Amino acid sequence: MLDITKVLNRSWHILWKYRILWVFGFFLAMSAGGGGGPNAQWNMGRRDIDRMPWDTGGGPGMFGLNSHDTMNMWIIVGIVLLVVILIWAVISTFLKYISETATIQAVNDYEDTGIKAGFKQLWKTGWSKTSWHLFLINLLLSLPMLVMVLLLGLLGLWVYFAVEGGSEGFMIFSIVTAVGLALLFILFFILLGIALGVIGRFALRICVLEGTGVIDSIKQAYAMIRRHLKQVFFMWLVMIGIGIAWAIASLILIIPLLLVVMVTLIPGILAGGIPGLIATGFAALFQMPPPWYWFVGAAVALPLFFLVAFSPMLLVSGWQQIFNSSVWTETYRELKALETIKPEAARPLDKPKPSPRKVVKAVSAKPVTRSKTTPK
Image (cartoon, rainbow, N blue to C red; front, side, top):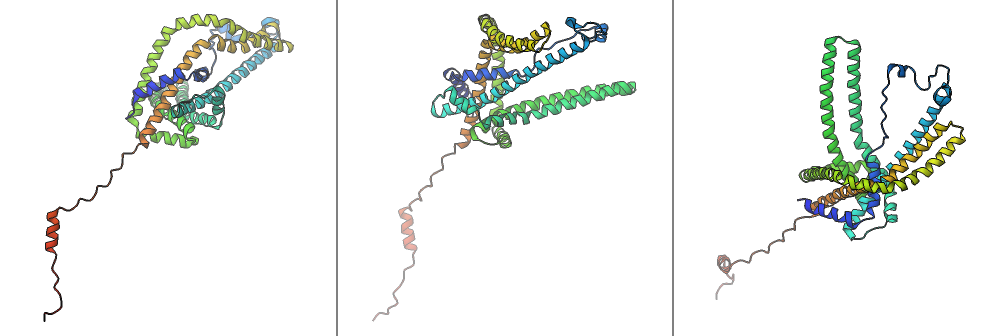
């Protein structure tokens, strides 16, 4: 039986004793929230839609530029933003899977040997082909979510065409049916996503610790979960409860963390301001008008500013990442140990010695052989 208390205690011990893992937890926290920048909502009236910033009617547009130049400036700024987002996504993805590989291997080695590896050794462990395999495992397990998006898109098209060209009865039928199917799809894929998420946690550890390939890791993870379904389900429930407790603790810690962030604002301004000014200077060399090259500089400066200024929050979030990773690594180790423990083979019993009575009976029952010689 899986000892959940032991798993949690060992994971907590590793979190506070193996502090070099905090660096990799910081990297995991950077990529945990996924991509995407701030969302902008445009509230425009009809006149604003009919007349966009670059539509000047032949007169001067934004910042004194004509419509053609304004359009070119928007294109350049959009390209710069896209490049910054892509660079950030690539860096965070690399750091995520390098850190995941290093953390899994570090926890396993520490439990086997009690030796704490240094940053250089852990980075070398993470910078390997295994990290690429982890990326492919997560990619394959994410494909059902893409299927869900496509199905919901098809339902949306069905409703659109029903509203545009169908009768009122068909339109109502289509809307009601599409909403019902959408709710069923969402519920099904939520449950499927939970199951695939648990399979993925074990597949990553099998890939790192056993050196198996992408498909074999997923197959072995599924087989292990089937063999220990009850234990894995209970551990998943425990981690859900820990996640809720962590969310409550984060609300309590937010005020102290904001006070610390006030201290890290100055390093954040320096970390983002210097590269931002350099990017602004390069943009000015391309003869951009004054407001536009500041946009380019801000696109470069803001990610670095937020990374450094809010590093205390990322550090605390990294603790959670390391603890969660350690819990599932310890769970895998415990389940594997349960499978390798074999019951002690029963020793063959010695054959019981026959009792004296049985010996006497056996001797007496033996026929007496007579001599063939005739008496004289």
